[in-house]
Image (tube, rainbow, N blue to C red; front, side):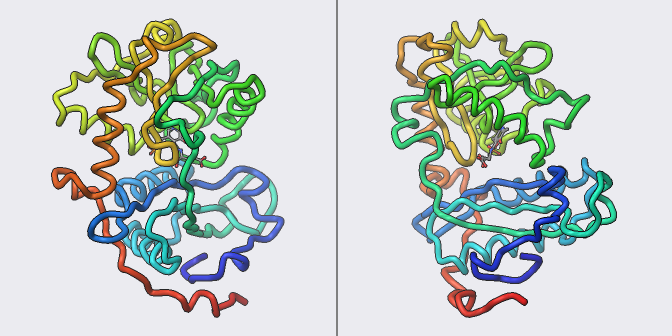
Amino acid sequence: MNGELVPWKDAKVPFLTHALHYGTGVFEGIRCFKTPGGPAIFRLKEHVVRMMESAEIYLMKMPYSANEIIEAIKSTVSANQLEECYIRPLAYYGYGEMGLNPLPNKVSLGIAAWRWDSYLGEKAEKVGVRCQVSSWRRVHPSTLPPQAKSTANYANGGLAKIEALKAGYDEAILLNMEAMVAEASAENIFRVKDGILSTPPASAGVLRGVTRDSIIRMAADLGIEFRRSDISREELYTSDELFLTGTAAGVTPVREVDGRMIGRGSFPICERLRKAYSEVVHGREPKFSKWLTPVAKSVAPQIETRTRK
Ligand code: PPE
């Protein structure tokens, strides 16, 4: 929290924290994986760069440099002595002045790390998830910038997620204001048709996913033909395969959309990419080893005894 390692129970914020009231925070979701060389963080730099850009979009002055945040993330993981974990850095306007203008408030930065194994359910990556096309549209660039990973955007994804869960589905797919597919509530989406892989361009109002980018590069490496192109709602239904990608969710096939089975219910290209992704993140594919940042074994446990005033 703001440059100090503090025990989990002391990582508290005041009730009048600006971001809590007005959604004025930007964040990242990053994962650390177990590799033969010890724990390693996947595409750390890319995540931190995206966070800096999210802040820039909102004119938020980051209190630390990208390199300082990278170092802080590494020491948070190693202090928690976690071999595999999810990492959540959040920069937010803190307690200062209420009212819509966030600029008078100090920007704070916290980083948490914890074990977060399954996101869309235990069996999701193997058997696939059931999705609903949401009645909520993805935020439009004229209302909220979709490419900023801001806490505010998640009120939109949250509404879609609630609607999907209440209707008995696992996840929501949001269309943009042009009625083209944007993304799921917390994942990008890929389609396979006649052996060709595609995903909507950033201009469709999607977050530029780090997993999405990794899959695109890995598909090229595997010789899978790829196009960045808009996907219509009807093209969801006529896909041979659909799958979701995200840091939390990994690479997860979609079994059904709106109660319709996708393709023949098997997902060979998704499975190939899912396995390749697993090899890469676990440090078993030297070609992409530059994507992994090793974490020193441990600088803990002094955080157990330190409290913050
Ligand atoms: N779109 C959205 C809206 C999104 O939130 C995510 C990640 C992605 C796409 C995929 O981006 P990337 O992780 O860089 O491949 N969602 C994060 C938050 C999930 C949460 O519940 O919190 C994540 O997966 O970490």
